[in-house]
Image 1 (cartoon, rainbow, N blue to C red):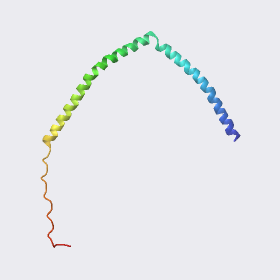
Image 2 (tube, rainbow, N blue to C red):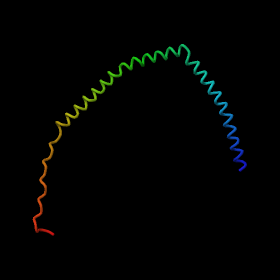
Image 3 (cartoon, helix red, strand yellow):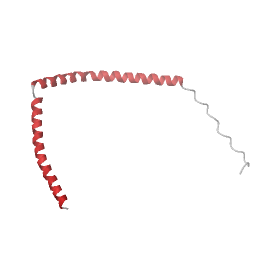
Image 4 (spheres, rainbow, N blue to C red):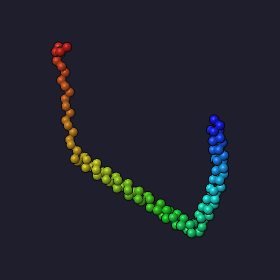
Length: 105
């Protein structure tokens, strides 16, 4: 029991010290990343990508319309083919004749 208690205490102290060091390191990484992100070279590339994306968004409705019309064209042609090659329906059969009275039973 004493060993488990010491282990739990060591685990808690290790977590506490690690969390403090981890937060400090995290803050350092964030500071460096922010500094790099704000450089003129990176921001130039970011603006190029934003402009490209804005141009491409304008093309999306036309591409969607083209894709949808192609899809509907293919499905209607396939449906027409199925109608022309479908077998004629079988003629309905007459219901079975009723048994004669007095027979059986």
